[in-house]
Structure formats: structure tokens, C-alpha cells
Length: 250
Image (cartoon, rainbow, N blue to C red; front, side, top):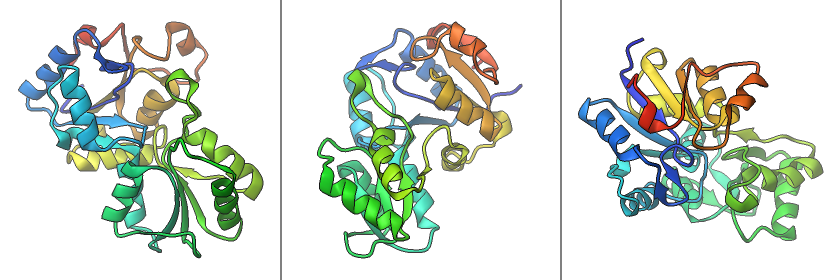
């Protein structure tokens, strides 16, 4: 296999919290020196590309802002091609920013969409409005299916759960493991699935997304998934390494 482009997850692959994983800088430098297109892909919608570039810089990793692609950015890209431009949003600044850029009006009056990301201010009123709008025909879109983040902080999937239960309708999740976000990342760097590899630490999101989109997959054992987890899955990563410092096929 000739690898011409790379999609790489963040947490558990390149960073632990805000500290670079040993070897991450060399791994990124090797990709950049080879001239390979690179997308740094994250399911979490609460940071802008600039926020992420600053986070990487603080950790000693030099990655341009243009390389980052978040589930909030992907959600806005998905919605650009859908009919309707009014949305009720359960989310914070980064998601709202991307939706404004896509031409959306944020409103709680007859929205075309209910869009859920992540927020610390989730409350009964927001849940009620979102469920009401979805039950009455608003399309239910969510940035990512993750139930929780670091320290079991509720994430998008957890915020969607009561809306789904009340309305009886499931959201369309844009983020991993949806192959949609992978195709969007490929389009961003003008790459093809057959010559692209995805590097991730989570079998259920990163590796499944790559598998469903036809990419080669690399699982690193520096984050969520373990060797034991692999045996329980109906699919397998193409390659397994302890961490990015050990990857020798890129």
C-alpha cells in the first residue's frame, strides 16, 4: 500500500490532555517533510481550528490551523447542502460560529433543524424546546455520538439521549464513526480513500469510521482501546502500534 495522505485523531494519539505524547512531534514532522496532506480530525465540537492550533502550540507541536477539522466544522459543511437555513442549537461558540459561516440563522422560532453539540449550560428548557421541535418535524442533527469526554463530562451523545427519548426520533450523527466526516476530511485535502490512512486510538470511532469509508487503519494503544478490545470487535485495524512513535509505515 502506498500512503499518500493521513487523517489523525488528537486525544490519545497526539496529546494526553494538553501534553504531547512522546514521539508525536517527530511523527507529525515526518508527515509534513514527506509533503503528505494531513487532516487532524476530532469529534469534539467545542473548539475552533484556531483554538486547537493554539493548544498544539502550547504542547510544542507545530501544526497549521488549516490542518484541523472538527465535528462542528463537518456539521456546518453537511448542512450547507441541505434545504433550510434556520436552526435551534444546543451548543457553544465554536459550533455556532461554524453555523453562522454556513449562512444559518440561530432561532427558536420554527427552526428547520435542531443541532446538538456540547454545552455546559444544558437545562430543562433547552431539552424541552429541542424535543418539541424535533417531534414537530425539525431535522435532528448532532455533531458526534460520544457519550462523555475526559472525567466523564457529558458529551453530545448524552445531550441527545433525552431529546431522542422524548421525541422518538434519532439524530443523524455527523462525526466519527460516520463515514460522512471521513469523506469530508478527504475532500478537504483532495485525497482518495484508497491511498489514505487514519490513525486513531478508539476502535468504535476512529477505526470504525476508517473501515466504513474504505481507508487503511492504524490503531495506537496510547489511548482508549486495548489489544483485548480488538478481539471483541467484528472488524480489525490494519495495523496496531503502541503509540505514534512506533509507526513505521508512514
